[in-house]
Image 1 (cartoon, helix red, strand yellow):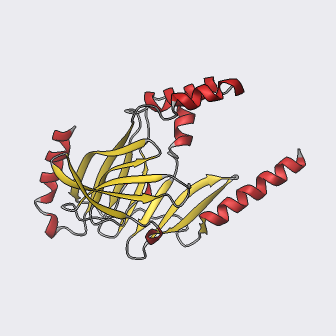
Image 2 (spheres, rainbow, N blue to C red):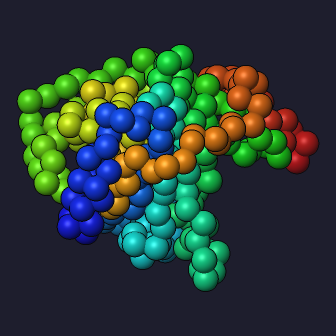
Image 3 (cartoon, rainbow, N blue to C red):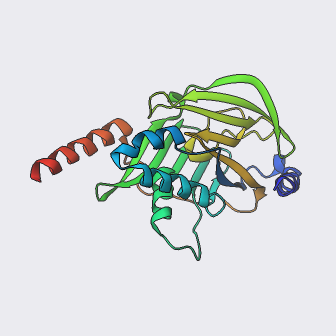
Length: 246
């Protein structure tokens, strides 16, 4: 895995200064450290009849670690992050659990010039573009470092703006000077090669630089968007009315 990462990076970096209009691609996969849901919590929920479901969720996340991958395609100012199509895989109950937990169907567009991310979400029978200000994520840069695939990376942490108490950890590489990363995280002084969110770590498996293509992905209805707060209120309103009807 490390060998692939190093070879692809060096091949692409040789002409980096001369091909700023070309695109770059990173393939990410995920891994789980220990259990996604702690064994203590599973045992506590045993009396509520939830132990079986929680164990199934844990097993599902672990079983699909090397079967799902995600692509980050970017140029100097824009990026798109989305899940790769999976061939010859049955969408069983485990797969449905995994896709829901890691929000695999989301397509995320990042615009560094305008400092925004747009996340395409399907819910309530509709498709929404949820807008987030990139600068609303307040990163704390640390001096902690480690080597990933032969490249020196530095640790940055932030608090989730969507889930209270959740800490996100990113390892970015200043020598790859693009402020993008998986799941719409970015704005750091280097490409994020590893990101941990809610016990799940996304890490770069393969990086290809200076591909002779243009960034031609058009985010449908890019200018029509709502905030996450507004979407949350719509979901709450929908659920209240649904329960009233029932």
